[in-house]
Every structure is written in structure tokens, then in C-alpha cells.
Image (tube, rainbow, N blue to C red; front, side, top):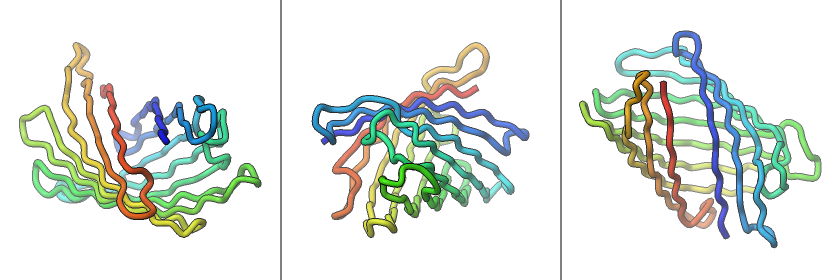
Length: 201
């Protein structure tokens, strides 16, 4: 089976860059059901806030609320969900960031015929960006536990990112490629690959 998602995301910073709000609009395509399905997924809005940061440590708090906007059942959860999270970012020098994170996603409303959602996710995220270079590497090891279905999916993803251009107004066009593998009996997939572009400015 395949499950492809194209996500359109817009992030607006405020409070002098210590906070941001992000809109995520996913469009999915899958053959998990006969006849294939293509359509809108569950739209989410995420609020992030940095209450503390210094040269060696940063704390990020966030919460994302997703709505059951999917045009087809297989492309969404059918539930309203909220996902509070915390990230501890350790700056291990000018080139390396290590950022463990925990997010807990649970449903609080929606289609009563669809299963409830109660998932805790631990991420260990690392970034290496050489000084003066236009490229970077990331690694993301993820362990989740689905408390409703008693499953523990595990995955490992690595990424290569690069600044592709600096526009006249100072905005940066970045690109990345991110392959990943699922691990264990409850793996979320055998393998995946994500390709993305971002415009920052």
C-alpha cells in the first residue's frame, strides 16, 4: 500500500520571534481502500512559544489542534484532536543541536463511530550544520505508544537540507530530502521519503 501526503504549511511569527502560529493543510492520496482515494486531510493549527532560551539551552512549548476536515474517511481521523508538546533544545556548540521532545495527542470530539485517539510520541532530534556552509544534516528517532490499540511504532529518519537561493528581499529558499525506515513489528511503514521546499523571510 502507499499513502502520499502533500502538506502546505504557513508559519507566522510574533512576540519578537518567541512565538508562532502555523497552519497545516494536508492533501492525501492512498490505495488503502479499493478504488484509491485523493482529497483533503485533517487541517491543523499549531501555536508554539519559547519561554526560555540562552546560549546552551532552549525550552519550546506547543499545542496543535486538528479538525476532522478530511474529504474521505481514510484520509483523516474523524476526530478533533489536541497535541500539547514540549521540546528541550540543547545547543552542543555552534554546529550541533540535540532536541528531545514529547507530544501527546488525544481526541476530544468528533465522529462517535471512529476510534478514540490517545498517542504519546517521544522524538530525539539532532541537527548538524557546519559553520559557514549552506547545508545541514538531521536525524530523527521516534518512539510512539498508541494507548488505545496497545501498539508502539518506531521509526528513524535522516535528512539532508540545503539553502538553494537567497532572494532579493533577503528571503531564503531551502530544500530537503528525508528518507526513513520503520522499525519493529508495529512500524508505521516499511520505508518512506519526504521531499520539501520552504521559503523563509
